Length: 440
Image (cartoon, rainbow, N blue to C red; front, top):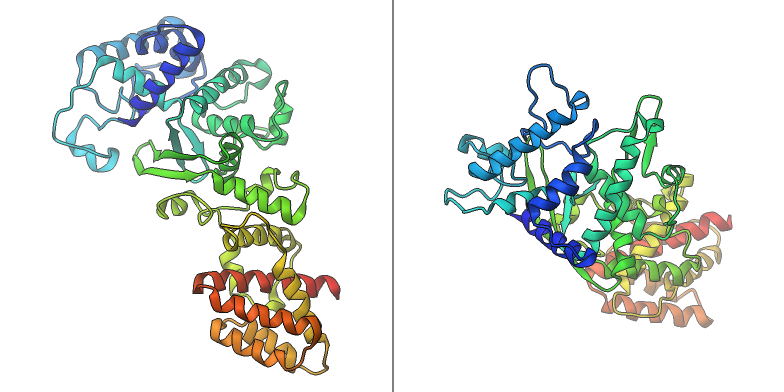
């Protein structure tokens, strides 16, 4: 099972880094159990496992040290004497075949031999799952990333044990992993960070009743991972364990797409600080499930989630709200990246053409030119033919540099695929609407 594989990768890296020879059971007993379960607040809640099965009158937060050790030994007994199932081997099938439909994935009636250590590896692997908004977790079989996640475990435990943070929720290790990995690899990380810094970064949320870990947007995590591996592809396992297990499967994450968007932003707008803002980065990206349905997570999946709603809007209905001016920069960054996948240098070509079209509109009174722009260039039914016919008509009314620019544009449009034209037309419409609003 994938949790066992992740646990093996991690422990091999851990033993090498710290010059240890821990077996999976040794690590589980001496480190994992001590961090995750040997406290009044757990870091992880595994349904039906020995750690959550309480005797009459027991409550997890009131267990004594002896009672917690009893539960540890109950796990040992199951691992040694029973066939592995989901109640004590994380990510494995349920014990009752009647429950397979609702609680298990990749179920087979072939009995698969499981080594005792594999069970402890599965716990270790499950504790390295990275939670993202949308109810899914990621498992990433990369030693450096796994060790980085492990480095964050101690902070979550310290917060749970801090009497000044008695309202801190337990059992959020996967959400913590997602936030920690994003913060640790992000541009705002400080080695001497305080909990107030995490609040500023929206890692945690404080209310009068509870302190809890927010679930990170997958795009924030994606951009942070692209800082670590700007040109690398990572294969991630996307899943959700709970009352009903959900498995999306193995999905490639093309981190170079994150680096590409950052590079486009830098060339268009200069200052990288704005792009590094978490709230800005979260404007990119489809829902995690929809992104994975594309088969891989790259530029296509990073499409700003509100862009589709704006693509068919008329010019006059754009930028009615202040928020649309903020979104405009995400739309433009993504559209330029899509249109210039194989180009190193980014030019603000559509802005130049948009300024030309605005000059054309202002070159005559009446509504004829406005109607040509709004209905034929940027209308809801606009396509390559309608667009080119409108350009042909415009050519008759311009001269000088604008005439040569329109002829060049016409040649560019001819060479575009329908998909490229759709992106180009949307970007040009946004630039035109933006320039028109800001120049009035």
